[in-house]
Length: 401
Image (tube, rainbow, N blue to C red):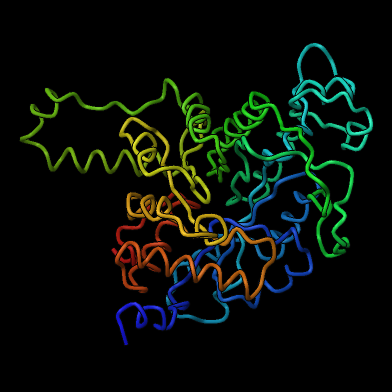
């Protein structure tokens, strides 16, 4: 048996705790009953639109992480009681950002006026606009999200972001024999043809920035979607922390401090830990940011990892997005991401055995690329997820002091 075959057949160490950094089981409500029986220890469940915010909250009431559950999340005993937790995420996905109008002094826009302003090209088809939901206010969205974050202590903000490729579904169902699945939560594509319309990028940025500001105010982590908009995602994030950058030492200062290098290293780590903890005064930027199913080039990582960036940036990867086909770009990105900044996700729309399988697959893939054993990788990914969600950075990957 070759080394590759041996690695692929090594039993997966579920008992050490596997964590899904980004998934969408509320898209298939009946599957939510399967969460308690899954092998994955905790799911980070994203909201995306008006129809699923309350669904995420409903299951946070049942399975949400509380203070009492944290020891179970860190345990390596493998007990059945240490599975089936969720961390809820509340936010508005860029695919649905056109449904939000920005409150200003001009009053509430009409439905026609709003959609003609935020959709590109501006639609002249009144029937298409009539098929869209009545827009809701940004202030109302933010107030709802804030109330959820106040209710659920460990909730994060997501899924939010930018998408330069997505097209808004039209009002005609594709002629391919599609029959609506009653189990699916309303509001998705549901077999409809895609129109030629996209959401204006500046509008997407405005909605994203407002949600980033809220996450900073509440000192919560965020999960960010970025498709064909990697430069704009960074620019928008950068706008939120402008004026709050960490001070980088000049070469002259570094030389002066060479004699106290060890003390300086301790000071830098303490400052990073303090920043990532999410404690302290509200800020306009989130303390911790995950770029989910990161599809950018490896070179782009440097701008996020620059010492002046005051937020802690994580990068998560999934089988469904990053390895749907052979991808040397994803491999290069995983190799370049620091070990303590990588996360694993399924990005699946239904809980259960398939979600477990996709998470196992991507964890094995990350371990293979990083040249980790499965135990090393699962421990490291567990440590990273705990840091991402709770802001507390364990001393070692296995959680020991």
